Length: 363
Image: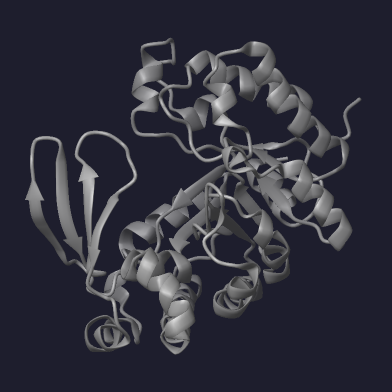
């Protein structure tokens, strides 16, 4: 199988020849690995044989192009962006942005300042020339090519902030539904233009961080009422174009799993093990629900960073080998992304084990 055929099989419920391979890395990881023997003339996608490529897509920032530096020092910079969000970020290393403040904290502010720019097709939000060239180039190869985007939950928590967003789900549900309606229509309109005028990718990679370490940000019933209808609508829209959809969600999504399956997502990624997710438990539940779905991730980075070869082998073989034995489509990936405290040798061992046990129909 080509990489395109392999990932397509994984996300459409068919059996691939072997498990897929894909990964996200912290910015500091590959430079650190180069000092540990990682080939100077290779990239991780080439060395590890990534089967998937992600390309950017649409700028959904309400005030497109707006960015204001509020303050900075030699280590960090505070900026205010076109969502009205003020964030502090490290300048020279990876890290989660520190949320300092949000302007869009009432329905009135949303309507007065941020809603209107999202109501119509704006081709300036699509880097048409570069995206067209990238799609033409990548779709001409054998990799599975995805466009990526955040969606309603990711844009909501990044625009309103977690506290206002979650409080408003109880106190201002009409606002939340309006926000989700506007962003759903926005994404459908802009992606329809891309698919009809540039090219159709092999798949979509949608980023929606629904959980934190100890559980989902909202109750399952609240997800079902406030967010799931828009997830279902977007997935159905992509399916109408014949495009499968991979969902990325950080954190513990165990309580939401049945709803995610019901929404129609074709693959779940990354299933953070350190937040309690276990891909084999999800596979058990899929059997009970009678649904096919692909999986990507769940290889625990807190095991990989021990450097303990026996533990690393067990972590990978026990999960990947069992999924293969059961005929479940799977793509090898960490349970979020690879930080620099995981050595090159440890990650390479995990990848090698996945390749060893990851052959479907093998003896």
